[in-house]
Image 1 (tube, one colour):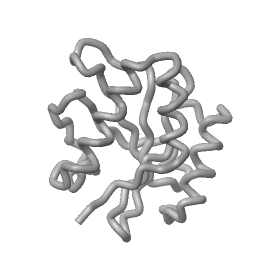
Image 2 (tube, rainbow, N blue to C red):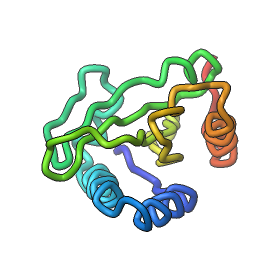
Image 3 (tube, rainbow, N blue to C red):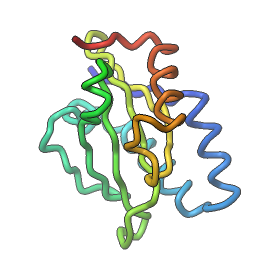
Image 4 (cartoon, rainbow, N blue to C red):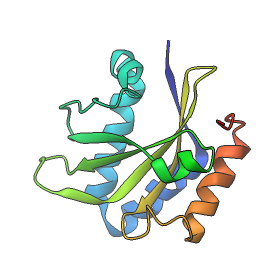
Length: 137
């Protein structure tokens, strides 16, 4: 049965976001709580056609650029709690397929979330390795 680990790093990033955009931080908290509590949803999360209609609405995608570097990561794009607008952040999950564990690794501004040359990507990869998530080949 799949499970979700909410890392200290992401908790810190959410706390910082509460200081500037509390509505966005609330949406992220609700999303993480939904994933943590709904094991059926978490089981299906790695399926490419998973677009669950929960509050907040979200979409799951393979982070293809990271996959090319050997990292098994997913990104979640999601809307505010009212479902009106897409939030300007992306939530990154590392997936340990051998243990069926997702790790909430980072919350990144969408302006550079996909940029593998940005320091945020290097930090994301360091977190992936710090939590012992196996690389893929």
